[in-house]
Length: 285
Figure 1 (tube, one colour):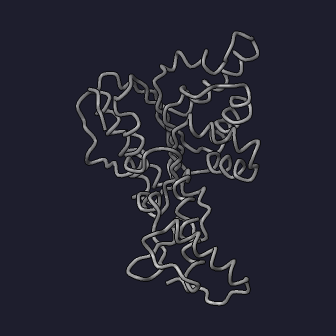
Figure 2 (cartoon, rainbow, N blue to C red; figure 1 turned 120 degrees about the horizontal axis):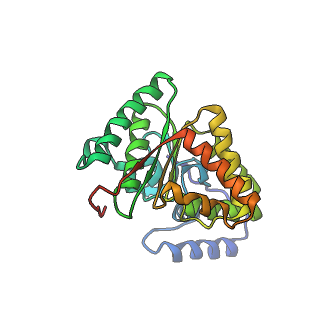
Figure 3 (cartoon, rainbow, N blue to C red; figure 1 turned 90 degrees about the vertical axis):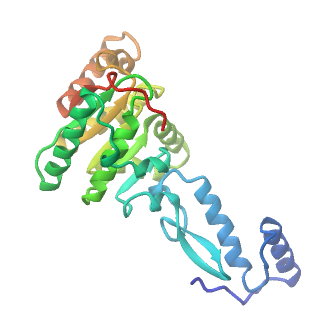
C-alpha cells in the first residue's frame, strides 16, 4: 500500500485550489488534504500509461506499474504491457498488446509455408535455449497472411523458455527514433542499445517505413552489422519481396546508395531464411 502524505507547508488557499483541481479530474473520488498527492500521482501515472510506447519507455516510479485506487486503498497495478509480456521478457514497441497472447498451439497450419514455419519455430527455440547457432526468418507476402501473428507467436514462445526479445512495428519505431534523436537523446540511445543487443529482434512490416539515408546509414546498417557479428538473430515480416528490397533501401539510383543497399541485403540474407506466406489464406485478427 502507498502511504498518503498528511503534512503540507503550502498556504491553505493554495492547498484548497490544488484539491479542487484534482477533484475536478476525479469527480467520483473523495479528495482531501491527506490523499490529494496520491491521487495526483495516480492521474500522472495513468496519463503516462496512455502515452506509453512499451515497457522500456515507462516513466512511472515503479517500472511496469501505475498507481491505482482500489477498495479505499492506493496500490500498484500492472500496466497492459507487463500483463502481456511474460515477466517482461518481451519488449513491445507499437504492436497491439493482445497479439502477445499468440500461442504456438493456435498457429494454423493450413499450407506449405505455415507447415515449414511451424517446424522451424520449434527447432529454433530448442536451439536457442541450448545455446546453438540459429538463423532468423524473413517472412513476406500480401497483407493479412498472418505474418505479424507469426512473429508474436515466436516472441511468446521465446519468453516461455526464458529468452528475451524485442518485437516492434517498424514504421512507428522509426518515427520514435527520429523524434527522440532531436528531442530526447537519452531515450534515443536507450532504444538503439535495446534493439542492437536484445537476444532476439523481431521487426514487423519492414519496408513500409519511410527509408532515408539517415535511417539506412545510422540505424539499420550498423544495427544489422552488429547483430550479425554477435550472432544475434533477426526475424522480419514484410509485404516486400526480398528481390524488391534493393530499390527500397537504396532510395535512388546513386551507385554509392545501391552499394550500401546491397551490403545490407547480403547481411540479412546470411542471417535469415526467406519464406513467402502468399499461399496462406487471409486472416483478420
